Image 1 (cartoon, chains in turn red, yellow):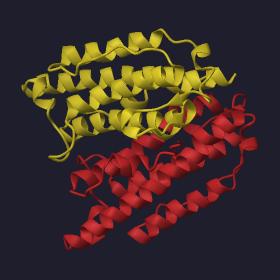
Image 2 (cartoon, rainbow over the protein chains, first blue to last red; image 1 turned 135 degrees about the vertical axis):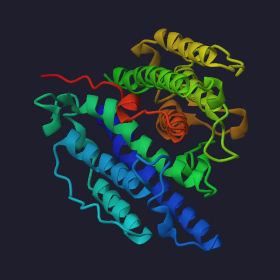
Image 3 (cartoon, chains in turn green, purple; image 1 turned 120 degrees about the horizontal axis):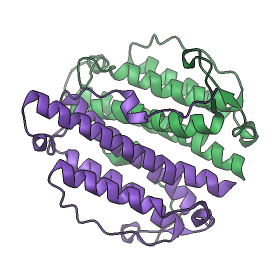
Length: 172
Length: 172
């Protein structure tokens, strides 16, 4: 029961968020076409000069999803080199993380409360897998998707909350 | 076990997010003081003319946290009238939701997978409590906290990812 909860809150939620992000980027592409400017003009857009631009926000959203699944399960993650410089490559990056997430199943998360997650910059400290996903991965994933959205919104792309959340699985 | 997972992903995570939001607003206050403009000049700031301004982003973050806990547990929530017009009142609004969240315990979420959440505008449709928190409440909460942060960042307030995430509960 718990493993399905963790799967839904990480893998399934990241899949939804990344699919919605593709839709948002496609709305930005249509906006650029309508306004007759190259989509790539948006790639370096940011809300303040020392903020990461759109491309980097998307790369970090992708990495947060990928590395969360990997670190809280102990499975390997594919490497990505952050070389994307157009819409096609960004969508390909997102698709590649979506494909990676497809390889997961609920039972991969059976040790989430015991597994230790650590990083070289944490100087020997660690978080449990569950702490890592609640304190870091989930808020960080939505932070970067929302910031990508905000940068596009600020540049006039007509996106709304529905594009960010996606369809609700309503039942009668 | 599952109830503690749900508690941590909703109540505890919202508490952290709201406490971090208070710190971010206090950084904005210091910024306004240093630049010698009234903090209230920021309350109507937004990233695009048809976007909700800062005050509303904070009100919705508060409501998302409050109503998630309430709806997935079946407990009543306090009413708030959206009348905040200065920093003190916004902080008071956030504090009031923090106090409300303090009244929860893990066992309040024992029916999260069965309870039906519905809204008048959903025209008779419903989500389970767990679907409501994964598909709506969690992404929506971080959306509005991040958008409040983005509006302040765009206005020159020196906030960084650490202000948004808060301290990690590192262990040796």
